[in-house]
Image (cartoon, rainbow, N blue to C red; front, side, top):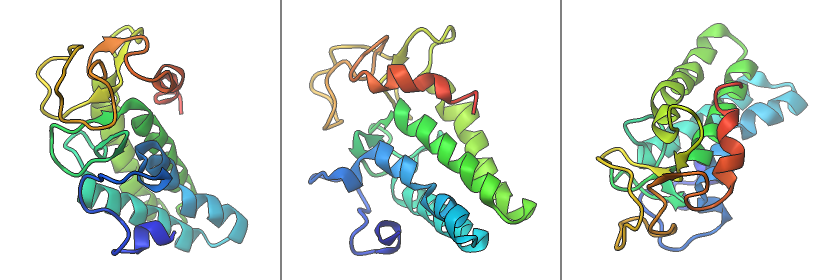
Length: 184
């Protein structure tokens, strides 16, 4: 809660010093913190507002045209050459779905559902092959090809094959998580 509310602590550009707080997937998962706590507290109004604030802050400082925030492992600012990890996409989709479900009114569910739709129709398809057998670890707003061996590269936390399609082009997590995007 304090992470997204603290304008002094939350990074407004690409991070150079990384922690668990700056990890992209952790931030995608953290978006649902207000909605999850609202189930315990019973205050859906406040929980929805906290979760939506988290999403707005991520998008304000790290948002990309596809609807996801840049986090090529860690928060990466708004530069279109910095990527977004597939796991961050699907975890953000799940978080936004929970926020919409917890919203006390249909009107309050609209914003998270619009953000979820943008991810489902832009960021997720850009992260998967047509047959769902391969994916790039990172997707980029201005990528014109998905190729391996990109060294040097602008992203700072992933290897030279992170932009190519493959079963495991960088870390194994996306291979395990990629299927959860559409069914949820």
